[in-house]
Image (cartoon, rainbow, N blue to C red):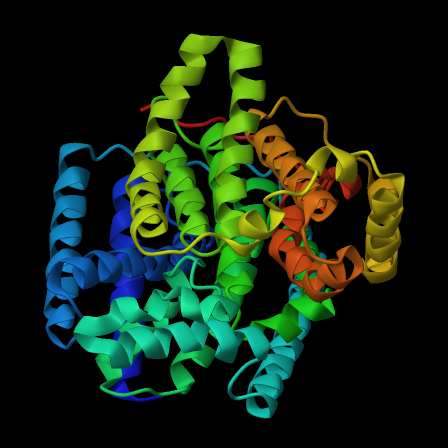
Length: 475
């Protein structure tokens, strides 16, 4: 890794950490777990924010050259200063860890050892795959790195990268990953193929750490270790970390939005809305990563309406929706600008013109094809083991709107994927076979996060040093 590449990662992380320090409440007491949660969030969110800054600079300045580094450093200093001043004006600490106890030291060390072995094995496998496929898989060099090269080499003519003549490279895809690669190349001063590999690895590490630390904050370290082992037990997750696809950043932003929704509901002060703004920001960055992210934004809002407006009324819904919109809308404005001024029409939309969607939705053969392909390709053994484990340990019945919001968002997202398959203009079997693995990777970390939020913890099962659940600090 060159110094320029390391600096690009450090600056992106620092931007994310400063922004999250501005949004999230500080821990009620110092500890490694809340800090780790913010660190892993910052790894991914920082790269998302800097990809937005890079796009705005690209449009305003006309190209991404070395002067962009100075602009980014100015943004970093500004956000850091504002964050420090905000802390001085409002020094209260409100974030409280709510897990219900501690497992015995021997039991917890055993689980930590298991998670450490799983993480080391996953890291080794990812490194080997990166060496075997240094340019990534098909979509990496045909779409994402191809677009990055077009922007980087194009200079002031970078808009040519979105010509309809290049329709096979999907020029309508959002630009978070290509611009993150271009940004790293600007710091390096050349097209280093280490950059896209490093970015994929960072998002893989960030996702694993995010799921582990979120579960640890909310349900305890023992539960977090089990969740981490299960997360890394999906072999295709590790395989895709080296693919240099946008699905890896996307799965991070899905999981980040879900985690922040739960954090806001369970451990933040009721008057703090920073975690909701962070969830909106993560959802917006998902839309800036892939077209599936736009669907995620829609289902997240739909789930919010169904749960909050239905339970608490429209006034409570509006009060919670405002911070979500504050985090979401700035990024969504960038996505809308890109889609309306640069991106050609999406192929699914253009090819569907003139086709009968109603006939497809009414065709039972399409439903059977989708069910059969899911049966063949979904990790059924792992899901079966999880189901058996859930039956054995039981579920923790809690009135948690945040967990329900995250779970309903996940269900609606999966339903949306099925709906897209039903109306696809392509051959249905071909479309499923070429995309189902990536869709499973996108939703897997969020599923693990939500599932282990709902399960009873080892402390609750074996009554290890159980303490009363801490209530959020009120000032």
